[in-house]
Length: 166
Image (cartoon, rainbow, N blue to C red; front, side):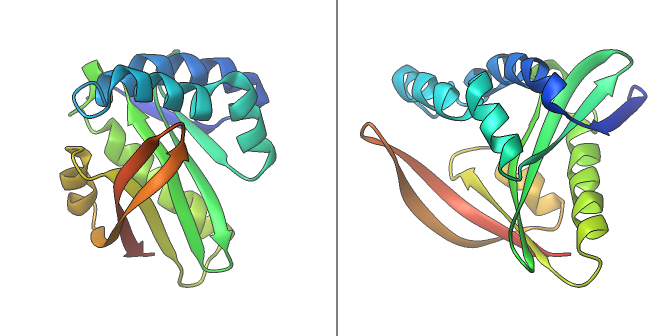
């Protein structure tokens, strides 16, 4: 494993996150989503305007770097006093399996604990067909419930909502 550093993202990093997303998201969901839904979700979640709005409304991004090369990101949002939502966690396909995802996951928990030192919980949504479900289970999360969420234009997210106490 390379020497990975993780740092908070700022508005100056929006282009980096956008570019990473375009390399990671379509690859991750190529066998799960139709090309049309994939394109819709990319615009819905990862346009530079959308990323800027997310940051302005409480999403905190962390970027993982190998030297000067960005290799992944995570986004955390506090949803209420004792609940955080891990909105996004993605690593370049060619860097998966190297421990970068684990480091991002642990950095997200550290961020949450720094903002809420007492007991709280973290949830995330993950597509029920996404192989990342096993990663989250290895990290200590459990399937709490599931849902089919209408995201517009006739598309749905068919997710598990996973949870863990932190």
